[in-house]
Image (cartoon, rainbow, N blue to C red):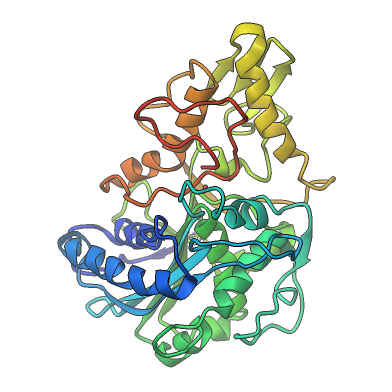
Length: 407
């Protein structure tokens, strides 16, 4: 494993805590419903406020590109359908003291308006039945692919999401991310790509698409990726291609989570189980499966403990939630995990009392457990866990986290 010294942006947080927080600020516009341009206009000052208010912990960061917002006007089949939320968001922050740029990519929009917030779940997160050649299969109109051949495949959802990011144009300068970064390349500057959940799955595909060779990487002092809570989106070819340049890296002096170029993963988070081990993985264990040993109308074993309920109600709900997603994966399953660093949450999740409790725990382990692990305040941007959708009739306990479509 490569070893590097920590970057010091000037705040009380270490660089991993800092980059994680910058990542989460990308979701601060989830509650806004408007056109893409208006959402971006409103979100910019919100991100600026978060950077200013947290300067003591983060150091002094300035928004230098974006935020850019993608908003779809069609469904996954290409038919017209309205979205009023930010379906993808990305911005870049710069810290002069560390000479460091951070590209922050939002996770699945957490807006609870299902009439207008469906694209991330349907067309990106769960769009895994078809794979796309990587990187040449990703063909944005506002960026130029620097690669000349394919090495591996990624899910269609990951390809679409990466295309959306590459097509974004900064509202002020009309520059794509590719063009902007091209003007900032320096042998003294560090570049970091980061995201949580959906953002965590897209930051490796985006970084590797933009930087296909060691010669591209060397235009910077260093280029790193920090994905957290990310589902798997590529096959072995993509994993090899990514790891060929973005090698697992340890940061000295930062115990527990001081790593670049690996997915930081909570063992009890269901989202990183997609799309390699949702169901029926042998041997059955927390590390391998979300649910297993289902007995219809009786019981089911989940990673948080058994579920039954009257006439197996809770077992049937859990199975009905996971199994349709499990069936989306092609046979044989092409998906392979990127290099990952796993952690055990503290405290460990308690066994669920019913299906609603199970879904609440899913949300807590996908969001709150990461905040606690990194030792930062609870996030104000709560992405959905779109790997799971609560079945009809499944409720939410009062005061609990959202239980529908949480990533």
